[in-house]
Length: 166
Ligand SMILES: [Zn+2]
Image (tube, rainbow, N blue to C red; front, side, top):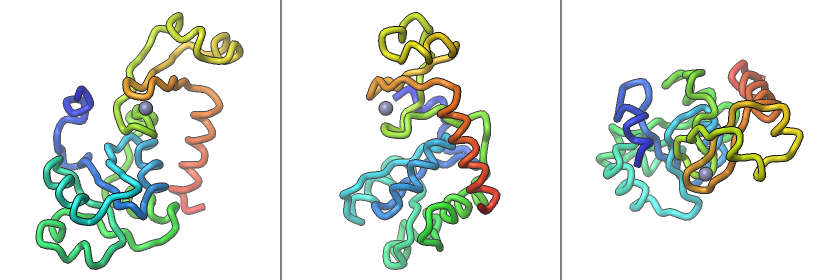
């Protein structure tokens, strides 16, 4: 997949992650921040470990039994809080944030968005959006169109609230 090269493999500051099935909301917000986060709603521990190993991902989990497993012991970030805002702060305090990667990834599919020409999306976005926005990108998997503007501004504000401890 093209996303692999853009992520630069497993550079120290930006490891690939695997959120366990209890951490769906955290996974979504980490994707908004641009992290490569695998997540499945229905997946057992065995499969999480297997996939994380194979794909070189660090496991995010609150499961004290899971982190005792041999490979997992050295390859996880333990999440203390059961509230997603604090969870997000916990991960960011370890891995940091890179503003340049903000909203570069599809929050549903976890793949890097592709820039598209404005003309190409004319039939797919509301007329108001088309007439007021210039930059559009598309998820190569689900085809969802992303653009700047209020949606992005609101997310950024919410994110600032979260990271500031609000
Ligand atoms: Zn998508």
